[in-house]
Amino acid sequence: MLRTLFLAAAGSTRLGRLVESAPVSRGLVQRFVAGSSADEVLLVSRRLADDGLAVSLDHLSEDTRTIEQAVAARDEYVSVLGRLKGAGLTPAVEVSVKLSALGQRIDEKLAYEHARAICAAAAEAGTTVTLDAEDHNSTDATLETLTELRRDFPSTGAALQAYLRRTEGDCRELATAGSRVRLCKGAYAEPESVAFQSALDVDKSFVRCLNILMAGEGYPMVATHDTRLIAIAEDRARWFDRSTTEYEFQMQYGVRPEEQARLAGSGHTVRIHLPYGEEWYGHLMRRLAERPANVGFMARAVASRK
Image (cartoon, rainbow, N blue to C red; front, side):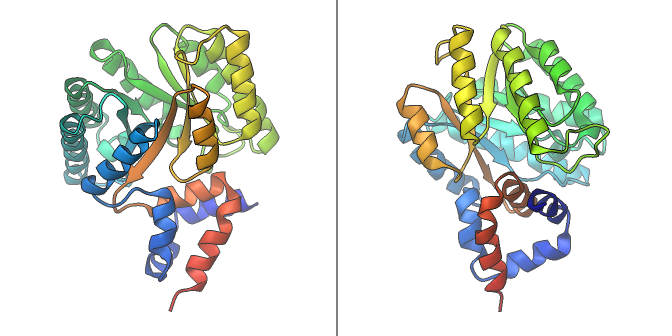
């Protein structure tokens, strides 16, 4: 129930304004978002890298509705990649990109060209790009863009969402040599016709997809904070005789830092998904949907509004 409420709240501009105006919202946001500027995200990236963690930067600009916004998103990624290289933070830090931020809903060809420019900047910086998953309506277009980008940038990663009924098939298609695939549960409100609705069914799908990726020739990126699924992933890696260099865990910034440290300390690559930018509200609601235990932080933020 809480997950459904937070996913609905992610699309509410009215509630967004309420949260933004709450006096303690900044403290809440800082728990999950690195900051609003490239300067801030580079500082946090340095701290995480010094702690032995890898990073995937995500500039929060997914509600792009104009070509100008899409160009600005592209330019931000190209700029931050140059700065990452200059700071010596690559290849430990990569970037995650939502094609909607690059104008996918306006013009798919335009979004591809923008993504290509970002991939070229990443290659120049000595790092990689992962295309983020969004709602199910964009999945086919995103995977088609991935195929095109991989012709020249084969390390481009894909994100797949276990709650979508189609994802087992997508895992089979993408579990190929050199293919980087991030598997997550999913964080959008989707109809039952395309997505599993119960937490148990989503978890079962996650494990089935995980088995496919671990058995394949690609590089699985296991994106979960669920201790049971983490343990299953470690077990599946042993079963398929994978070393800790042949897969990685991914977790959200600010969520379960003790588990992040434990995994990194045991020799795993742990990549922190690190968002930054002004458009943090929708991202924050989806994080709360994934982990309803954080509802207390949001409730205190809204209750403190004056």
